[in-house]
Image (cartoon, rainbow, N blue to C red; front, side, top):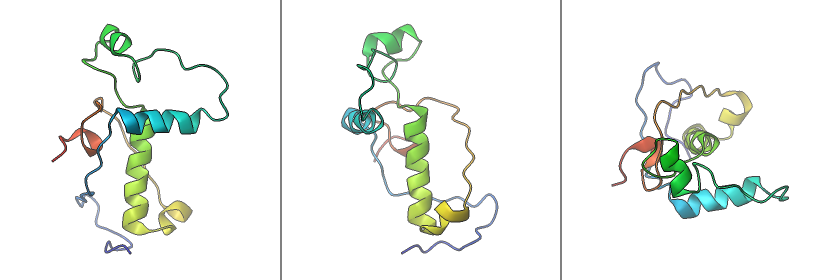
Length: 109
């Protein structure tokens, strides 16, 4: 059950429990969105070191959709199913989330 208020103040900081986004979580996400499998996954910035480096990243990065899904899960955990019925999430993903980073790119503790 959520302890958050139904209408939190604008700008209120909310902190989630830790969520580690690692290669296993990314692989599970890929399997979930690729079923039924329509094509073999291509090497890309989300699953291949060389492709990520070629694109300017130090390592593969989480898919934006996966990062967004983690944020949505946090909001449902905080506000309950009512968030899905009338809540709104608007986000700008301003830096990459690398595997091993904590929720929203903060180092996992």
